[in-house]
Image (cartoon, rainbow over the protein chains, first blue to last red):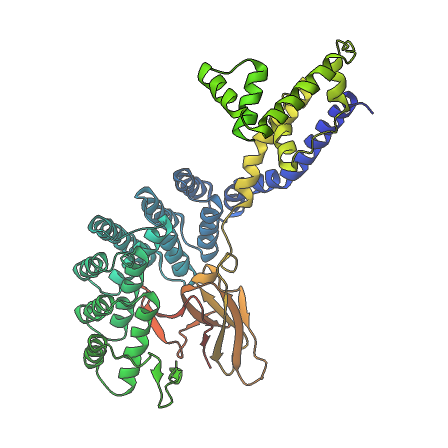
Length: 288
Length: 220
């Protein structure tokens, strides 16, 4: 067979292979695009209610929310028996977060959590709105941190840090304390002053607060760790350190004070110690 | 090559400068150099007596054709192949086929790169075991942000028959909030969890943190 006769067959084969390869994708894409419509079609709502929900849902999709996510939210609300008006308010709070370009996943998650726990829609809206507000404040704090010199290697690190700060704000860590931590991270050793470190530090501070420490004590303890050059993994152990002190009967403040003194003196119970033979052995594993 | 031999070449070609000629003449004082000159002159006389054959017009090509093919490195062949000019023949049907494939391929990428499951990705997963002692319960499910708070998706099993419902879940490093649901209706906070957080609805979520290289047993 000459090359001239072979070429059309090769092209035809490529066409068939290409269509076959994309056939599934096309079908899947078509399926995704119809999910919202199918959800509304089968929903036990009046026509007016469906129109109301459809309008708000499409607004969310047009802003960039995945149609599957919106459809799932609508489905869960319908299954819960949430009235159309309340359902649109739930959609609105998520839409507003997206409009402000906040990490909308967290807000969506909070709404799903509320629906799953059968929380009254009004309280879900309040909790989700509060979360949005915390995310907005967190984003401002992270922007400030970057201006002060905290380095970001990837965009995802920034987003994670925003979520961690929002979580900390929700736990009662005030913005001023978060700002203190970010200045501490910015002033850390050249390669250490990263958004990942700030993310971890804020998370640990929030954990210490949940263990009973006051926010200033919590951030002071974490800041001391950062000053002493602790990395992300070592900062994690502050939580274990405080838990250990609490088990010994110390108050949270006393435990934090003890931790800070250990950090300053360079003595940490989770560091490997030399025994008499000069071997480095790890101490017994901490009990969780 | 000695200095005399260099000068001899130039002398025979008639290309020596005057000072080089004088140097050449001076070197002829040496007997060895005179013998070398005589050998060259003898050779020249012999060559003058040799019959000269006329060369064919394609003499050069014939010699080159008789030479073996040069063995170029493989990469050089590939490189030459890449840059060799080619004529591309096409028709409308083929062009439409290519356009169609190019047009729908982005749809494929977008569809296939949907939301990732929490259990896939480059980071290794840690296996976390969740356990709840719920004597008298018929069904206990694990619900959290790792599964979008779907209350009927992850069912724990009571293998002992004594009300200890347990199950293992691979989770990527990160922090996860969760609760147990007993018999589809009763939401229970894991009492053995290391960390708890307000959920904003008046309940407390248990929180499990998976560090990058760790396995957690969050329960008894």
